[in-house]
Length: 88
Image (cartoon, one colour):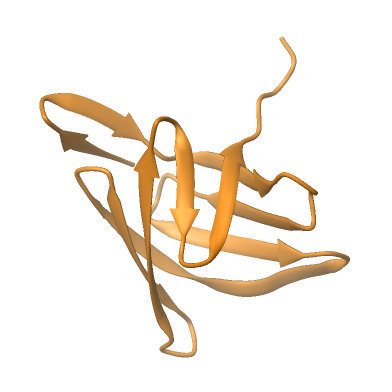
């Protein structure tokens, strides 16, 4: 899933993780997300939409949150997440 901002495409699909690795948020191509916290898998699940570089989340319990991607970093409420790179 991608949005556009100023003519640029912002691809958000993939794994995003905090610097300490405690929170891992997987943004799926079908507009769903799955967030793990520590050893707790699927601590939060729900759906998201992308408008430009802005994300709107609604979890499966109805809780809402927002995020923004700036310079390749996902700022999700009070969290700062970095795209996890996979080795070739």
